[in-house]
Length: 506
Ligand SMILES: Cc1cc2nc3c(=O)[nH]c(=O)nc-3n(C[C@H](O)[C@H](O)[C@H](O)COP(=O)(O)OP(=O)(O)OC[C@H]3O[C@@H](n4cnc5c(N)ncnc54)[C@H](O)[C@@H]3O)c2cc1C
Image 1: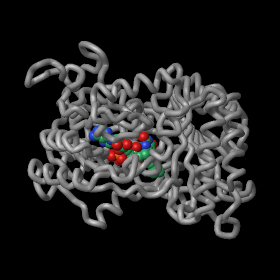
Image 2: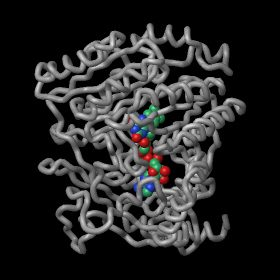
Image 3: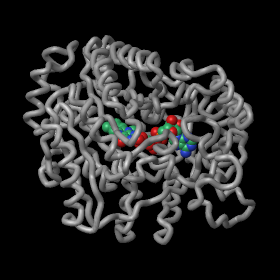
């Protein structure tokens, strides 16, 4: 990057936003460049911290004037997908969360909140508790400090009825790459008080909100999100299955229960190492660092934690534990017909760490438990491969065999949770590796790419990706898709100042 242009840009930002808003200290640069992926750290050129939409607009205008690439983050906790790192080293990180972290509104009558980018799941949860705990926020099972805007914009998801975080976002304020401030949905009305901004999702004209998910066309400075009334009782149910191949039958059992919406949550269908992996370091890795965990080792872990080769979790909501008991009875009837399912009750699950994580996720309570996965191997490496599978047991099982083998060929431990809705399951594959070991880094990278190519050759794409692979995945798309994405970029951000390269655009 041109050093004089950067200096002139930072001078403009210090003038318009304040000298405290510019940080170029070596410690800051190193910290914002860190991530957990195989591709290495990506130190930014500087970090700037606006405290209002007008500040963001001033930063974008200065970036246009001096042709400086920006990279917006909300809280920068996208661990395994990029953390705080920019797509390319040398971009200027715009840390929105540092000073724009207010809950602007909670409407208890209409069940929504309006937040700034720094509002995390933990902050939102705490605010709702403070207000009387009448509503709950649909949380992820990732870091409680993760932001609700950052997550929604990356098409993140939770596990309750409001699991689709972009789908339940309503009404945004966005600073476009050209410096304009845009309000989406009913907020588009030329009025200072758009009444239905955060209640009406599909308003007049095109659904422009969608352009800001997994893209680089603008910087979102506020967003409405819908909240679910907190039910008096949340009761979970769990079933452990003994064999890897049981996946086929489990998917067939889950599908009708979701398609009829009898079960209101998504099913968390996790394999042994995904669940046991958050409970401590691999007992085999240090003796055998180039090999995947043995079958005997996996069996021993399952027994120690009371889990299956696959464990299914879901929950019901109701007026009381007794009121939902008949629903749990019906689900038990369905699963136990298989002859292989071992039922684990809500009370038993509360004593099993990884199942308590599921209960928290269904209950709108942020928790740290799943972060234990990051310590399964030493060296702090983890990255996520996130393809989808149709809810067809045979296909899901084929994909399992395919990906399990690729992990094993690369000496890595197969860890996956299929998050099942009616027709589709997102396969959360976590690749945990020793980032300090160059050979293992390369194997983690090879594992990711091999799986991507293997599923793509069967017509399956990822739904979200680590920044290491944005350009790689864009290359997998059709030319017309690339043309449309780049054409929109040109229209909304003609100088390409916002996150060039994010999701492979611009
Ligand atoms: C163990 C573990 C479990 C996890 N479980 C889940 C899970 O269940 N569900 C899930 O969805 N995720 C999960 N994650 C991933 C992750 O933690 C969250 O999705 C994350 O916290 C996203 O929010 P953020 O504020 O940190 O986003 P950020 O890191 O701030 O941003 C995410 C992306 O969005 C862009 N962006 C952010 N804010 C803006 C903005 N205001 N305007 C324009 N672009 C913006 C950024 O450029 C970045 O590319 C998990 C991670 C781990 C390690």
